[in-house]
Length: 306
Image (tube, rainbow, N blue to C red; front, side, top):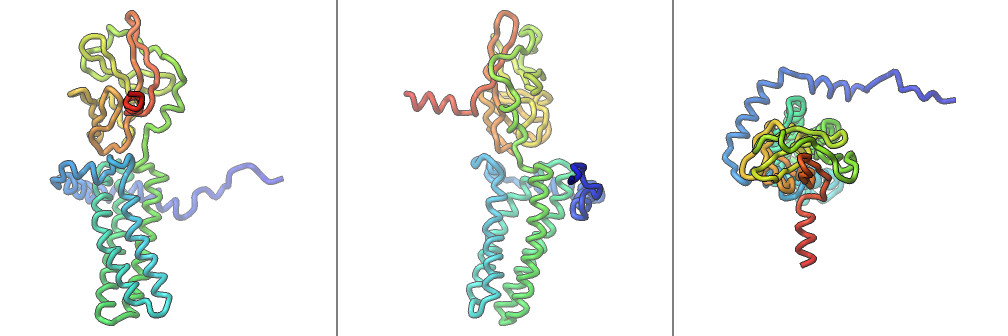
């Protein structure tokens, strides 16, 4: 009978290497300088565009499909006879598309946690190496040095493939760019949940409470109005109860994402997903809440009904 015990071998060489990279504190000085540089760029509303707030998830993974796809296609054409001009054209398109893809990636990277930033630096270094190799490939091809151009192109594809593998580690192992509040609707039971006494809530100050096993942030406004959102920020899980309330919104203390208290809508990034929101009511001196639909869903339903 086959043993059900886990393998004694543990993680393989690749995973051990990635774990060491996550703990590489020597990269922190470079990471801090690059992060400050990215934050200093006056992008204004363009920063949220590059984050992908309009799309509902990070736009960087979508944008990298163009350079990776064109470069892979160029490699295929390099293996076929008579495709020199077509391969060069694809490499040029990939280089042009790499710049905006990199901009989106750097803007996202600057809002990550320390371990993610360390891995992200190596991810970027591999991709930058690939860009330089493809630039050299294009120059060599334009000068008639086709063999050298092909060699540099294959080397560039190897570099960006490595960068893509590291990016996959960031996305799927480290949850960079993932919605950290996605599980809330599955964890909260239907119906109304008691959140304690209304009189104990300070006006205009976020307070942490629990709905089942899910932390929520409760904000009391003047009068009897109460707002309840999931406490863990959808961007990186920061505690909204430790943030600030202003103009009907709560600001995450970690990376500055701003959510509308009324429905959890992410009015400012880096969060690309809205915050799970609850209906709230005051019964006597007790505050109760129940999970509502996605932000904007009820408003859309009302408009459709009208």
